[in-house]
Length: 76
Image 1 (spheres, rainbow, N blue to C red):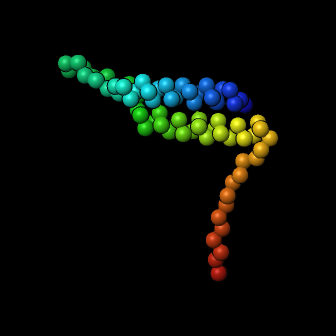
Image 2 (cartoon, rainbow, N blue to C red):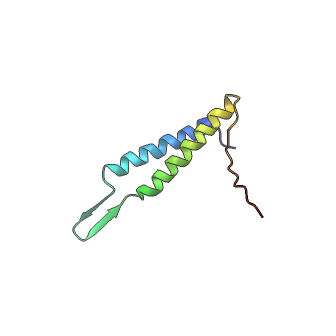
Image 3 (cartoon, rainbow, N blue to C red):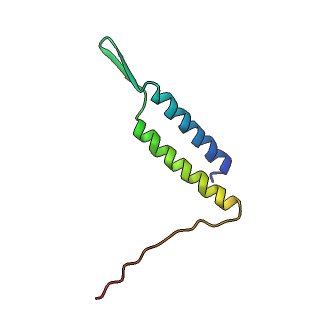
């Protein structure tokens, strides 16, 4: 089970990774090149952990996660 503190730790780590990659995602020296990471994947992980932290914050404070559903009436 993931705790709120662990989720915050992961979230902070991914934010640090985004900062590191944004300063220089790839570079070349002569015929060699190095790519640090995929920035799109890092942003997906940031979104995931941000939502996880928000959900755990709500549930630990005694609240409930609200989910909306949409129904489309059909005449069969």
